Length: 224
Image 1 (spheres, rainbow, N blue to C red):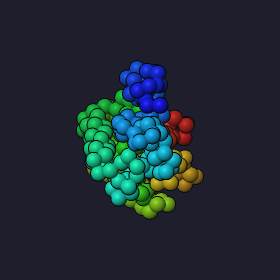
Image 2 (cartoon, rainbow, N blue to C red; image 1 turned 90 degrees about the vertical axis):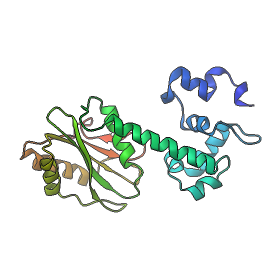
Image 3 (cartoon, one colour; image 1 turned 135 degrees about the horizontal axis):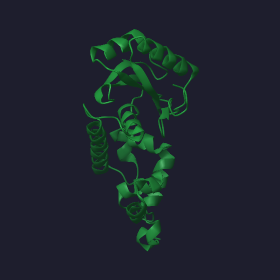
Image 4 (cartoon, helix red, strand yellow; image 1 turned 45 degrees about the vertical axis):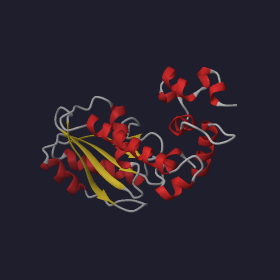
């Protein structure tokens, strides 16, 4: 049965317009991007097969051109379209948290950090540096490591924060494995950085771990 024969409330595009994008599954969102299916299969069928093949939406979005274009229903035109969409989303979030803007939405901060850090295949530790009114001074990637971890030096974090006259920071790093849960080492490092920055009157507002799905917030879990 073609999607046009489905009830209106079940069609991905109509569902998005009526209920918002958050109401759609990964397959439904991907089906809207695909626009059409292939012979004998709807766009939703193709989307489900692609998600099964790649294992996750993230893996599909991060696939290189060679693998992406070999998949049924995809190709160079779809790859170019996807890269343009991803870049627009990235620029939108960067402009939403540009220099001088006050941080008023934890959700926006989470999405921004996820956008900046999730695609890395190795661990990256970064800071969002803020003034005394929690306005953005700069986003700074400070340390890079391997797929298993990155060495973080509190002295360098303090030095960077002082050089920008920051009054507060939000820490962030990614887990390339996709599991956004803090390790004991993550918890220890967070307390160590909090103490080091506290000595120079710089507050640590939160620490986000970026993986698949929602980024983990230390503040929301009472770990800051």
